[in-house]
Every structure is written in structure tokens, then in C-alpha cells.
Image (cartoon, rainbow, N blue to C red; front, side, top):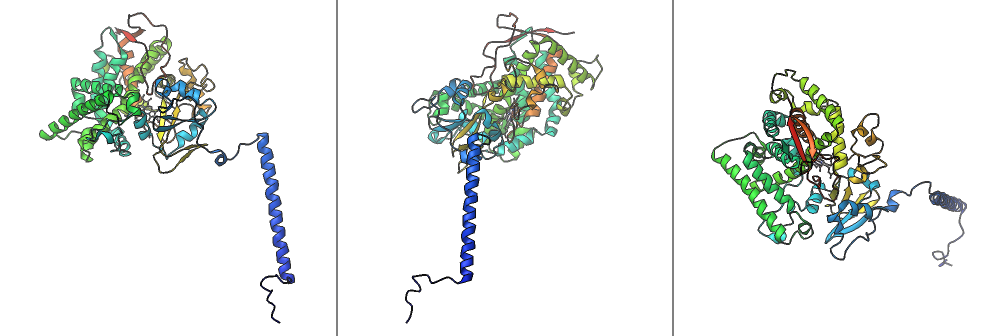
Length: 518
Ligand code: HEM
């Protein structure tokens, strides 16, 4: 009889199959036991707190901050970013929002991940948080005030423009502008007005147009438009970039003025058939439209000028408030200049001509001034830095997930003003950067003054040259005293103003009393 049950009921196993079955079963059993033991050990170690769980176990969008208002979000971010970010992140990174823009405030320990990240975009992050370059499109509702036209190409152009060969070709002109400006000061000057003028002119020479730079009045007029643009970037323009309110109207109007200056300069050049060796010509030759040249100029002047225009005069004030450093720096600069031209019978203007662009920034050639500059930047540059996740996916920054469309923010004061990294952080003390103390080297990523990791400052060399040149001229030509607006000597510099989104001059008026040196 045919066995119909054979397919339903397993028959007795032959000895080979039985052995195989037993060996497979024991392998599974052993593996299960092993996994159980390892899990037990791992859990035991974790409970003891000996090791941290693997990153992917704890990666998450940070919890929401309680420092927020309905709908509008964390408006404290605009009025006092440092205190907001510091308080909000006391227990670690947090999420917050500014109307419809989602943000993540990273805590100090997340800085390595922030600076090393290469997926998120700083340009767009800053464009949103600082209201970006206004757009002149006719469809106002669509414009979000972001320099989207040039994108990453801006970096390529800027890198080409501040290449040393191009700057070297302009050195005699830069020296002449700087010398004429500084030597023309009277008995007093407000360095936070007079320095930005010359720094703007030097920057325009390199990244905009030599014709505009050559005309002091045109240059000053452009500077006023530029300052107006900065001032009109208010929280309202950031929160509601589509709202054509008074600030947005003002920015539109000023942008149009800036654009007209570019338009006229290009038209004049074309009419006269001139082919200048300057940034504007370079950008025209790259095929950029006048609008794109305008956007590039504003973006680069903003990045390059704003910081240097505060850092250079503050460095001079910090030196003048510390006479022993002032005299050391003066001696160091005198030795430096003499090593290129020791003929003391020549005027300073002639002697500095022999110094090449590279000489100013060669490592170790002006060690005391270098430490002073670093210390001024550490103490005074306390601002939020931004990265927009402009990708299609969520991005992992260390243990934090930055969702698509979110801006990650990190404040430089987390390191610059941390007393565990820099003891007595609000004291100006350049020796902290001396080889003996090297406070910035004892903690990873402690000094963020020139950026770190994936996005270091592209203009560091040029900015350093500008600051050194202006300080060299000032300390060689004048005896300097820091005074208040009534002419009374100041006993100390005001503390850094950390209540701003960008590097800002001191909150109280500061002047320099000058006496010409023999
Ligand atoms: C004392 C003056 C300056 C200081 C303290 C300074 C500081 C910085 C810092 C901290 C960053 C990093 C920002 C971040 O990580 O989000 C940065 C980036 C940058 N800086 Fe400067 N900067 C100065 C002058 C300049 C100048 C003169 C230029 C150009 C002419 C310039 C061009 C740039 C650019 C293009 C970036 C962005 C790099 C990138 O995103 O990859 N900076 N700067």
C-alpha cells in the first residue's frame, strides 16, 4: 500500500541526517548562549558607566528647548545669542525654531562634529540667519534673500582673487592707500570709523574694482551703502524674508544702489575699451552678469570686511591699553621693517615698500604681534557659526541628527570664553599663546578664531596682512592713548559685546589720542 502520510509526517531519520541535525542544533545553541553572555557583559559594563554606548545607539534629534515663544520661536536668539545658546544647551544640544526655520543649538562638546562636517552648508546657513544678500528679482514673494546664484562658485572666485600673485601685483597701491590714510590722521581718531574706511578700500582693491578703490569718495559712498545693508538686516528680515516691510524695502533700495555702482563701473570700462587687471575684470571674464558680480562683491565684502574692520582697530586699542606690549610690538616691527630696508633717513612709506606680501605672514616672523592678534580675536570674536543641512537627507553630526532643512549653530564663546580652556577668559593676555603656556593646544579645537576643520577662513592671510600693516603704520607714526568720547583716558577696554550675531565694535565709544612721533 502506498504510504500517503510520508509527505505529512516525517519518517525516521537516517544516521547521517541525525548527526547533521544535532550538530546544527548545537551550533545554534552555542551561538545563542554566546550572544546572551556578550549582551550581559555589555549591559553590565554600560550600567557601570565604564564605556559610552556606540554613537548610533544615542544619535537623535536633540530635545526641544523650553526657551521659546509660541509660533515665533526663540526670539532671545536675536537679542542675546550667547546667553540664549549657553543657557539652552546647559544639559546638551537642543532644538529650537525661528518662525518656520528649524535650528539646532550645539553644545560645546559637539564642536568636533560641527567643524568636521562636510555635508552641511555654511554659506546658506549664514545667508538665512543674517538675511543674506538681497535679491533684486521682480517677484518679491519668491525671493528669500539668499545668494543662490553663485553658490559654491563664490569660493572658487575668491580663492583665485586673493591668490598671492594677484595681491603681490597690487602691493604698491595697497601700501600707498594705507600710508596716506593713516598718516593723514589729526590729533584724535575714532578707530572704529577710520579703520573700516581703509580696510574697505583695501578689500575693494582686491575683490571688487580698482577704479572704485582709486576714488576715495566713490569708495566711501559704497561703504555707506554697505553699512546700510548690514543695518537693515533685522530679525524681521530674517524671520519673514518674504515680507516686503520697511527693512526689506530699504535693503532692496540699497542693493539697487550697489548694483547701479557696479553697472556704471562696468559700462564705463566697456565704453572706454579698458581691460583692467582687477577682480571686476576677472569676474567679467568668467562670464558673470552684473547682478552676479554685485552679489559676489556684497557677499565677499561682508565676509572679509566686517571681521577685519573690527579686529584690526581693536588690536590697536588692546595694544595701546597695554604699554609694555605696545613697546614690544613697536620694537619688533621696527626690527622687522629694518631687516628689509634699514635706511632710517628714508620716510616710512618708502621703507615698507621693500616688504613683500608673504613676508608679513611668514610663521614666526612677528611672534609678539602674532600672539596679540590671536588674543584679540579670541577675546573679541564671539559669534554664532551656522551650517544649513541643505541635503535631501538627515545629517548626523556626532550624536546629533540635523534634519533636512535645519540649521546647526555653534557659538565660538563656548571655547573662547571657557575658563577651563582659557583661564580668566575675559582678561587680554597674549602670553596664553606663548610656546610655554600654549593654552589653545591643550584642548582639541580650542581656538576657532580663524575657523576650523572643513571651513577655515579663506582670507586669513590677507586679513592678517591688513591688520599688521595698519598697526605697523600706527605705532611707527604715532604715540597712542585710548580715550573716551570726552577725551578722558580709558583705564580698561569694555568687555566684548557678545549680544550680536556678527563681530561688532565695542558697545561704548572709543577714540585714540595721537601724537606724531619723531
Ligand atoms: C580678522 C579678520 C577675519 C576673521 C577673524 C575671520 C574669521 C573667520 C572664521 C571664524 C571663519 C569660519 C566660519 C565658520 O566656520 O562658520 C571664516 C570663514 C571664512 N572667511 Fe574669514 N575671517 C576674517 C577675514 C576674512 C577675509 C578678509 C576674507 C576674504 C577676503 C575672509 C573670507 C572667509 C571665507 C570665504 C570663509 C568661509 C570659508 C568656508 O565656508 O569654507 N575672511 N573666517
